[in-house]
Amino acid sequence: MHRVLEPAGWVGLCVWPSIEHSPFQYEIGKALRRYGRNMAAEKMEAPFDFGDANELSTLMSEAGFIEIDIWAAVETISNPPPEVSVPALLAGTPIGSLFSKLSDRSRNALIEDVSQALEPYTTKDGLTVPQAAHIALARKGQDVARN
Image (cartoon, rainbow, N blue to C red; front, side, top):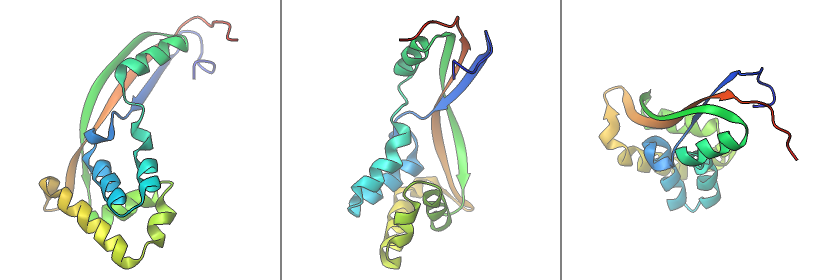
């Protein structure tokens, strides 16, 4: 990113903190593990491995960014009911094909597990869940020679 920015250009990033801060994905990951799909759960959880704000700041600084500002944000996300939203979410991930190959019984049981776990977030229209993120803004510093 640093390389393609114009001098003194700005970059904005959004990274997810640990998956526990995103109940929808967290409960799907837990359900996958309960059904012995540990590798699928790891892939589901992977985007949430880079959410430490201090680490993000350090990496951005090491990459040559300056005036780094990072803050936490939580948005409320509305989803359809789990029987719609769980398959839809999984279809758009690297584990979508694995989920589609599960038997109807296993797929329905997994969705039911997630639905029960997310009961506190259930509304008349589906699910309303928090989604946490770290937002980062930084300016390109002077180009530095890299080895």
